[in-house]
Amino acid sequence: MEKYFTCISIVNVYPMNTTNNQRTDFLDILFEGRNKDYGAYDLRRTADRRVRNAIVGTASIALVIIGGYVVNNKLMAAETPKRIVEVFDTPEMKQLTEEPEKPVTPPPPPPSAPPPPAASSVRVTPPQIVEDDKVRPEDEVLPVDSMFNKRIDVVNAVGDPNGADNNPFVGTPGGSGPVVEPPKTEVHSDPLTWVEVMPKFPGGEEALGKYLSRNIHYPQMAIENGIEGKVFVQFVIDNEGKISHVETVGAPKGGGLEQEAIRVVKSMPKWIPGRQNGQSVSVRFNLPIGFQIN
View: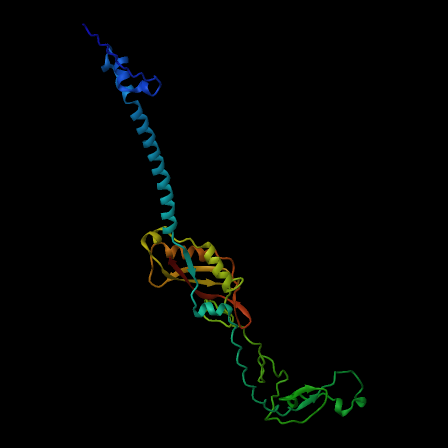
């Protein structure tokens, strides 16, 4: 008796979709009998990897650019020095706000000497033409010799011929009497270093500090080389408050600090001039300016 066996093969059927189209098996079937070295086969087989690598690479580049920009901003903000301009306390700066000392009252003058005794005087009558018998003795014209060392007056008087000044023009230049001259005003041609009222910046010391803080620009060369310190600027304030002869004194700091200090001082507005004996005078002024990097 013959036996028959039936073999049933089970075949798994997978639905075809766009994802399975990229499988290697499908590509091998698709390119069966075709030239796989042409390039299309490799392009399809590596498409997923290339797309993924492109997305990852693009995202990485974008993150690097954004991160570098943020880090750079933080570093620049941390490294940017804060400019501090200090106006140091010096005798010249204190003179801007302190009231000048009151002048010492001089002692009273010594009592004046008594006036000298009066000189002899001669009465002189204006000449008139009259008859001889009508001329009074007191109206007769005296001889010239009798008028020597006597003053011309309206009455005849006898004085001290030796103790008095008999010049009729007493108290005038050329006479022998005392001459009172007006006080001479002292004129200063050279700038002074110390006066009764020192020059003052408009608004005082506080306004001067604000002006320097707003207008001084810290030189980049000094920032890069870490140069800081005080720069002493000397200049002349004339009797109209104008600034001239600006220069720096002392050891130079370098890095452009001296040039910046001179530039700012030259750009200042007019000062209130100093005064000496009630008059405006030229004064040589010293101003220290401090540069500091934080």
